[in-house]
Length: 421
Image (cartoon, rainbow, N blue to C red; front, side):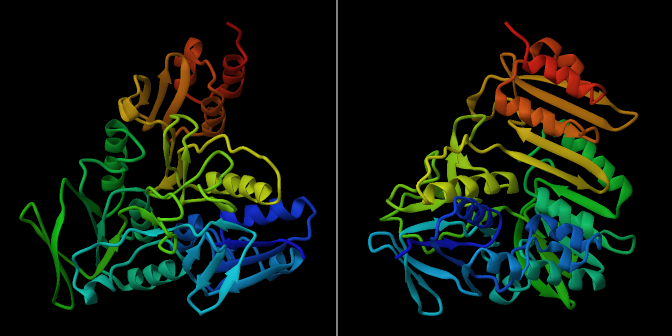
């Protein structure tokens, strides 16, 4: 009988694993299980859908033919509830139990929900991760007058940017003292905030936390620890994500924040692999073991895990923190380490700023090796800088030329990356 491979998940990591498995030409039976009832789509594109840049159908990355062509046994709208790694079985919420010869956990992550709310209010807070989330935000935002967004990270700002319009007031309540605290430094964050406040009907309250949310006047009343009160008719929260691994038995499989994996994407138990937003492994730049959730990492992890599920010995070189997006018309990128002092690293920062054009660029070096970059507006060379970061390129000789911008960037970085001595 052919080996039975089970994949829990149906997004970047899962599909990459399927492609890698079938590329090796084996006759393995592949079962793919997803709690969502639709074909695979890109959560990254949901904000494009929110602002009307693409239709809903544009979110999808494959159709029914993808699964048929690869002879996949698909179970959509079914969630895993219990994994028994010793018996090599998975129990699903429809009561079925499936055995496996090899298992890939690629179930992704979900938004971190706000705690301490009345059940009625908790059910009305909007988050953005799935198509259903995007549909709900789009519907409610179209008739909202004042939205309070809890958080100042990427998701919060992407939602605010997507729904912004002149007659809609948006207030972002941010616990830290800056926007994008996990992605950019304070100087870059200040430029971004100034641009947002001057170009859209959006206010920020920094260093603020919500103490209570109650119903009032057909909407909501929020009490903050600053003593301020806010009224809103729609609530959106962007407070990070948590891996979808509630079905994993911590007594059988090692879990920290996510499922701990080695460089082969193996969990610390036989025949179980993990990839994507829940796989906690080595950061390629810092060497630390952490979750680095992004689409690029998920695709590559899924590919390596799929290969290794069918007998290869592929190694994943490590995750790279990377976010490239556009907020309120301004492109921003962060790659690798973005602030000196993080992870105890002794890093050197080199900055370039052009106030007239609103450009900010910062490179971070460990000795002369590039380990991180923060780019605002001038991000054309983000891909080349990423290559330099992951290759450990020695850029110290031409750091001023590189940090100043993308004119001649490819030639400059080529010379740096292949310089001798």
